[in-house]
Length: 68
Image (cartoon, rainbow, N blue to C red):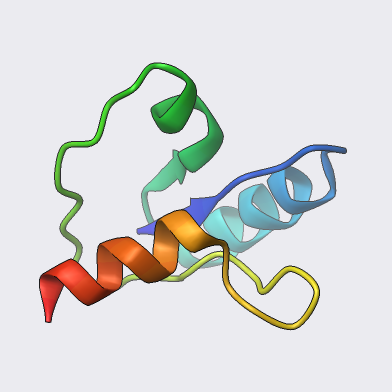
């Protein structure tokens, strides 16, 4: 599963290109957060979102910490 969030569209474009090459599922984390859907996400083949300013977004870090 390819996870992404995008403010300008660049990450969305990249995620969709990766999906074309890998034939994997895709999920927009921005929509998930805006709709206040904090349910678990599971994938056997995760592609995490890219770092922002050298680190992963807090909602990703916090979610990963809860999983471990």
